[in-house]
Amino acid sequence: MDNWDEIRTAFQVARLGTVSGAAEVLGVHHATVIRHIDALETRLGVKLFQRHARGYTATEAGQDLLRVAQATDDQFSQLAGRIKGRGNDVSGELVVTTIGGIAEFMVPVLAKFQKDYPDVILRYLTSARLFRLEYGEAHVAIRAGSPPSQPDNVVQPFLHLQFAIYGSKEYIERHGMPSFPDGMAGHRFVGHDDPASRAPFARWMRDNIPANQIVFRSGDDVATRQAVLDGVGLGFMRTFECASHDLVQVHPPLPDWDSVLWLVTHMDLHRTNKVQTFLRYLKEHTTHLRDPKLPEMTAPEQKAPDQKAPGQKTPTQKAPGA
Image (cartoon, rainbow, N blue to C red; front, side, top):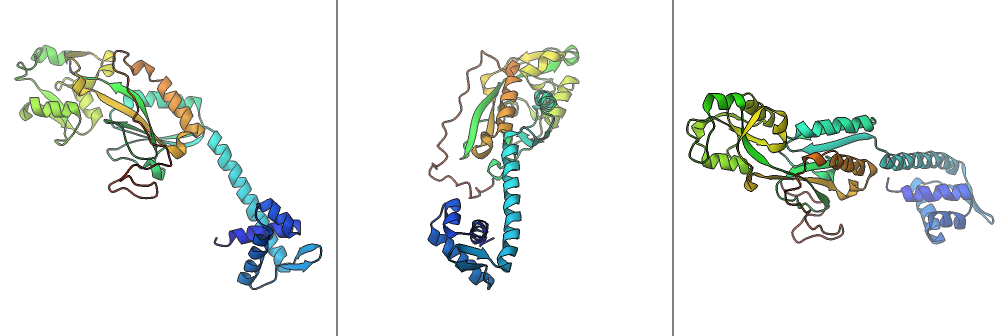
């Protein structure tokens, strides 16, 4: 609505009856009030007020405008109240986007969170693509690898995960215990069906295991994990996953296989009560997954919100491929 400022000015003049009163309420100069009234009357082609010594009295057309403006002003006030309340309330939709393969520890935390905050509707999205936080596609993103560096995002360290090679006891009984690097001939492996994967353990398998020994491949982390549990072959699993399963570690973790997870939020939503409550809850309920022997992660140095590094896109610009 291009002339909302003029309508709002006319509403205050009709309500208060004077230009000076409207100017004080609106925080503008009295000349601005007169200019808005004149412009609106010219635009509508009618007189909205009768001018007299005591001030302004609304005409019939002005009374019509007053009723519409009053209803609109009330609706805006109600909307502002709802938005403010929603900002302080832990309710409504909460969108969490993550990498695949961490549902085993994430879903129990999410289930507990919903029990404690039953008014929250959770969306747990796993996808290879990066959800655009600056466009409101997600409230919280869990990302792996190097610290995310998109401008206007708040990045916090989350978890440092270790990977090792495991086999089921049933597999070891049938095929024997392998030795690395020279005793892998004849052993069967479970791997990811992505020849371009940059995951460190995927690169290691490409470099060290002949393709014909990788007898089960899948792009689904749940499927590869289950294949290892069912004795199809040897494969990479996170060390914390294996305590509750009947597995044998056949190769210990290597630093090169580690995976670092980051919590990422957009600065516009980061300080909302809902997001802050969820982040605190998530950290508190995953402390058992943190190994004190591992090096402490540090978040990347971030620029102030009003600064922009050379070559970075502003929030209103869409980065290629984002």
